[in-house]
Length: 172
Ligand code: AMP
Image (cartoon, rainbow, N blue to C red; front, side, top):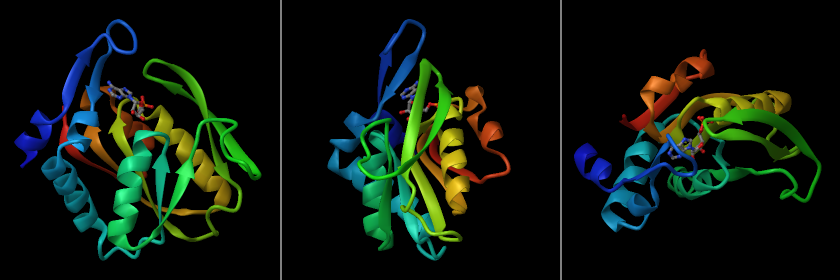
């Protein structure tokens, strides 16, 4: 199954800039079997972990995060790019594999002590996920794990997120 999932991801060299090998998961998402297996495999891992909320990171994290939340019977919280969330927000700035950006979360999205699972498509340097740690800590969330479809191991994002737990389905 891992091989099938890997085959369903498309490599785009030099996107969005020279030297980056972009792992395009849109091809995994549009293949019904690969998408269903991805959600099932990730969901199965958390089914008995008393997750209260799944946090999805804009934008591809929304796709996997919402599907996981549905499977786990939880709500889903959106972490968005600046200026998109309409209510009061917390903001964190971070460095990306190819640039700098900020993320926001609604201040009332999570209650102190709620058990959250964070979902995104891909872990590279861990800068994005680390910004989410900052946001979730402000809200007092209990971070159960970070869950990714893809992990680019040589960029050591996992180390950046320590001591938080990290799980990925496919490693490169
Ligand atoms: P990072 O903050 O470096 O861990 O980057 C993770 C975020 O950037 C994820 O939301 C990914 O969607 C995106 N990203 C970074 N590098 C890549 C890559 N090589 N291929 C696809 N997406 C990437």
